[in-house]
Length: 81
Image (cartoon, rainbow, N blue to C red; front, side, top):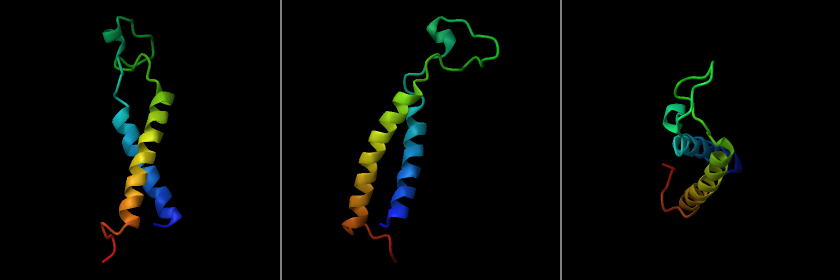
């Protein structure tokens, strides 16, 4: 795997994992017993904690990328014809 394809695989995995982690721990204002502020959507989360989710995503993606790199480097799965 070249360094360019490695970066591309990492970025794709990062976004996929990020979108998977977004709903975890999210509570809407009506679930938290708060009122919705003017201009906010009814389902907007009270505390989205995006920095925490981005950090968790980075760690999970690094592990997944390592597994993907090992699969490609070991020729266990061949991506060439």
